[in-house]
Image (cartoon, rainbow, N blue to C red):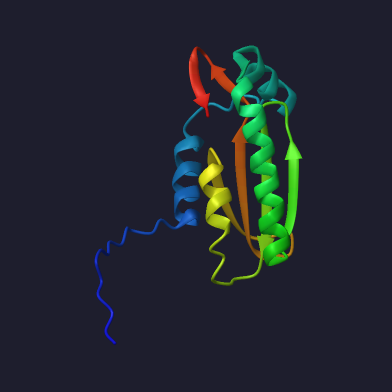
Length: 144
């Protein structure tokens, strides 16, 4: 049985250490500004952010949670589900594996997904977010 490559493209890899050196060189020429605190950054973000409830998404969020729990139990994945002010997040953590077909349902329901490696003591963590509120920042909808 042969394998047919339908599409393949490789992108140049960026060495993060080289990038950091370049940034440090560029910053060395600029006058140093005081670094704002975490609280100052969050305050600036929040003062320009509005949250708009999307009532139709409240019921859908319960379906998202139920599906996430089903997948967790089916594959025995470490799972953390959290309700934030504007969204529900689901984190699945596991070691490398294949055949997680049913996880596609939950990924398809999510508004955004992030993938992390080597955190929480596992090879992979998939973080899925389902928004219950529209997030408007500086007059622009940024989520969902």
